[in-house]
Every structure is written in structure tokens, then in C-alpha cells.
Image (tube, rainbow, N blue to C red; front, side, top):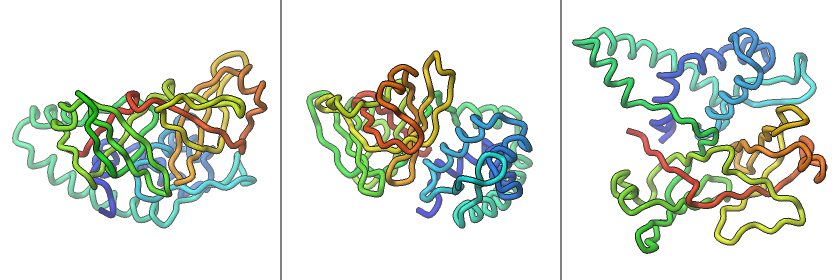
Length: 254
């Protein structure tokens, strides 16, 4: 599938995200694109990270040293998605015009829910193993990365999960734990290698840590400033992160 159904739904109901891609293309900078879109720099990167994670390939490519806090441009895939969205807009207008009742639109809105989970990772089901009343689902994220989710048997059946199926793994930032070089990963937990992209927050409180995975997807976690200082964590630092499979929620396109 060249464009996952979930990404198509996401961009059609969140047109401001596509507007942000347009601003990136025009401005060549995340800082200036965020200003043009009327949002904060942090909100801009949250939006871009989410779109990049849902897409088959990154939509925005970032470079350092550009004007206004570093350069950014759309990838070839990002340009293609932007063109596709313009066509989707025309189709969407036709659909809205054909709605017989305003309640039809309200129903569609209820069926398309947003989520509070900061991390959304797309993957394919590479394994499905029963463990008592639960199922352990292995997800291939691409680039040689794999994680596991532990969900109830009923959830597996309700979502109609099967080998090869595409799913989105949802993971709250507070469930992602950073590991120091002398700390061991908990047995049974997912453990991934990541590179610190950015630290966002006050020095006397929890800091948001943006992490890049080897396959191009991103994760967000929180850590105390004292802990980060203790291990000298700065942008470009390589780290391990862990999270238990039971923390991984799964979603499928509807």
C-alpha cells in the first residue's frame, strides 16, 4: 500500500497539518513554517513527527545550519502527498455536498477519534503468539526494528489482527523510559537504540526528549533534567529506551 489508509484519514481530517507541509515547502525552515502556520515550533515538530511516523517514508527532511534554526524541506514523498491531498480536497468537497443530513457529518466525526498518545509507530504484524488469556503481537517497524505488544485475546479478535496486517502502535511518552549506560533493560521489555534529536523543556523540571529510531521513525519520552545532566545527554547522544509490551496499544484503519 503506497499510502496507508490511516495516513489518508489523518490528513483529510487534519488539514492544518497539510498546510504546515505547504509552509515548509515555501519557507524552507521549521521555525518560519511554524510562524506562518500560527503555531509554536514545538507544535510544528509534533505534527511533522506524527506524519513522518505514519507515512511509509519521511515527508520532511531536516538539516542543520540553515537560517531560522535549521533548514527543512519536503522529501519527494512529501511533495507527492501534498499533491495527493489537493486531489483529496476536491473529492472531500463532493462527499460533503452529497451528505443528506448534518447528522451524517457528526457521525463521521465520532468514528474518527484522535488519541492522546504522543508516539504513533506504523508496523506490520510479523508474529502472533497466544499466552494464556493474552496474545503477544510482534510488529515489524521496518529497518530491522521490531517491537512487541501484549493485548487481550478479545482485542485481537475485535481488531481482526492477522499476520501481515498493518497496524499503528500507540505509546504514551510517559511510558517510554530512557536507560543510562550502566542500567539494564527490564526482562521482557521492548528495548530500542535511538539518537537524541532535541531536548525541550525547563532545566528544573521534566524535559521532553525527542528520539530518532534507526528506521526514520521517532519517539518522544520524558526525563528529569538532573538525570539527563548526570549521563551528559545532549542532542546526537545515542541511548537505549525501553517500554513494556503491555503499554503498547494497537490501532487499525477503519
